Image 1 (cartoon, rainbow, N blue to C red):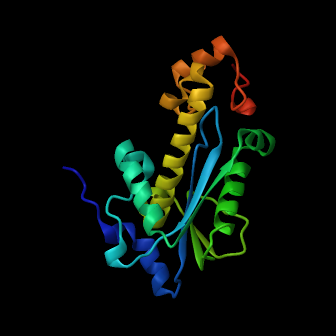
Image 2 (image 1 turned 90 degrees about the vertical axis):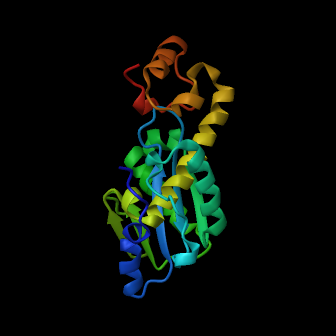
Length: 206
């Protein structure tokens, strides 16, 4: 039996924070920590949390089919009180490592929001170097409406970016693998070598 989307379940963290007096609650998430190529992308969103403004279907971006994700992303950007998307390049990832690159991207995304949040919800077990209260939620993209919304915006943005890279570097089929280490992608690296957007620290063994 398919699980029905439950608004109050998705809003448990946000409602608890609202009860403590927090008004602007930002969710932040990243996409692209694991791929062999391309940037890591971080999004931060502040969503309206009134019943009438909720977007049904917001969830962990990995659980949402591609077409639905694209529709949701547009709706989130339209309804958000504020949102930002930040890329951290493969060169930066190679220089400072993926964890630090992710934290940097999240920090930049939060700090560039046009509304300063009262508190930030982060996915996973991540502490970001920001001068704002923050709470990390393990599996937050599935459990928190705000983090889920950020994950969808980041995923759709990064997928489109990798589709564009596929036109420049067609040998690697980035439109299919989005930079992840599929067998076909690894075989293409072995055949053609690395292209400029490959992460050198992730592809040493090839």
